[in-house]
Image 1: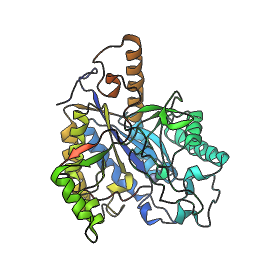
Image 2: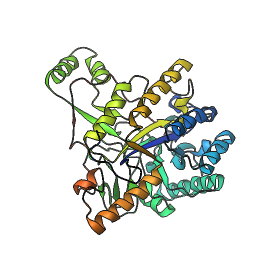
Image 3: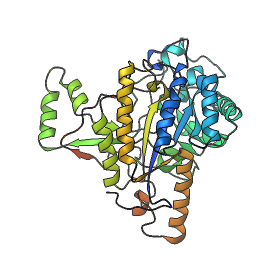
Image 4: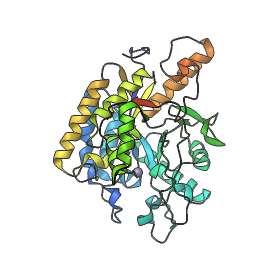
Length: 381
Ligand SMILES: [Zn+2]
């Protein structure tokens, strides 16, 4: 049962769907990027509408220029059944300024480019998206989850009010972009819940005007028998791999074809912890057979839809579907209400407890005695 229930429709928990909308199977690092996956999005959109959920399609360059996606996206905007936001892959988003000897292989992080180049790339794709869909861009997610203070400042300067690049508990320091770079962003000490970023330190809450809405990722704390079994497993040959598969350190609200129980558990945890949102993520290419390593066949796509229906069924009663911008509006409204009236019980979530910036990653582990088997994260673009 939810810990509290409010808002005009009686649902306080927000269900946020974020789709990184990009070319086909970029995990294979293609030089000739195709966008056939756009043809598979209407089925997903239809399912969301059946459950009155509103996806935010965070759209990168190849999709912003794809005829099929343009038609789809304009219809979503016209009917107000979702949001178009921005997603930026530095290596193929104009203006093209080579950074490494082979950018399509290395896929450098945007944060590795000079500030002027970052500003030009953000400005160019933003203009293209706004012209194409005739709406202002408010929401953003970075390519390969790379983010820093400079990038955040440029987004705010360009008119963005939401970012969702933070993945609590996850560090990508060991994953190189440029071979001469320092690897990806380390989010292990970042908050799990929404907060306005401090422009001098994006891991802290502040007054930058850019609302960070981290992806929902929960950390497990294996105790008792499960903890002992996991420790024993890790001592065996290849045991680390098995431990990651069957006793993962973290679980994402992100289907991978093997984690229905885990997805449903995250929703239960969100209720128990009185969170005010959960944020689901997937890539547009993952709705197409063979569009990703996780869903290689038509059968695996059918299984994905079975999992999605189970998840959406589970949230139907007490979650409300919002786009990222709609959640931002609600967050600001709730903050004003707190400031103006200190109304007790108006909110569900950290702010109701007087914690404006939310708990930090690592401050709450989820005791788990019987975790759902989950594949290790396959990475993301
Ligand atoms: Zn991407």
